[in-house]
Image 1 (cartoon, rainbow, N blue to C red):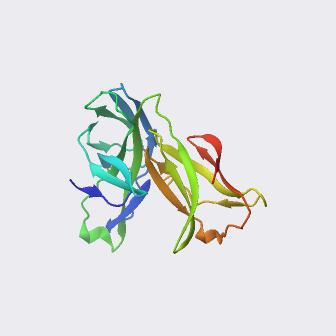
Image 2 (image 1 turned 30 degrees about the vertical axis):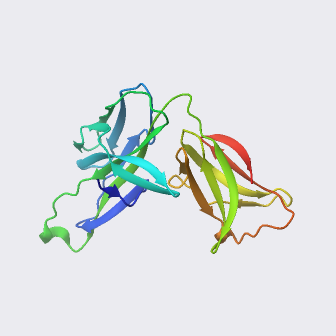
Image 3 (image 1 turned 180 degrees about the vertical axis):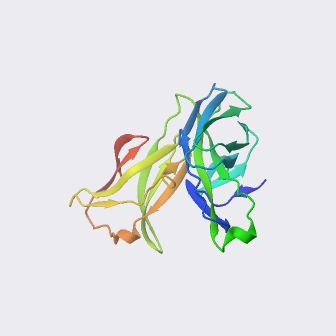
Length: 238
């Protein structure tokens, strides 16, 4: 079983040819299915003036030791897996579950969409580069009862201080607008959290480095984390 080693929300790969002008609009960006739901649609619009051949694949998404892991799976079927999008047109892709039994905890996947490079005529390539588009979109299969339960801690290793966020729930947590707060001085330090490293899957954790902020906790001071988790504002103690 192969593993996708480089996770990302959007990645551009360089290959020989001319600069690509393909632009896609994908909706929704994040997909969610109820446990009993059999299928869902993904709409892809080609906003460019040229046809765009694309490939769609699905990977099982887990987290181990704070890092994303992606593995090929046949639990989800995408129809069609290959499509050529006409210029300025939209196309609906269907995503099916093979097993519609209610899972014990949320199931997590990534839908990877790749632009398929066209053959390049070496006589007209002109020594340029061709940029092939790749996008990655989360797919969650969950129940209404599933919840995210995030706890926080501040730790130090040989490299310095960091904040660790652990999700002991059975639903993913998406962190945004995360700040470390000194409750005594009211100073705030923004953590480097984005749409890639902001996801913490159920029973997983992530560490967020604060060395770049030149942060050192002061004796006698109390600290907390302010953040939005799945859109809700929270304050977590450390």
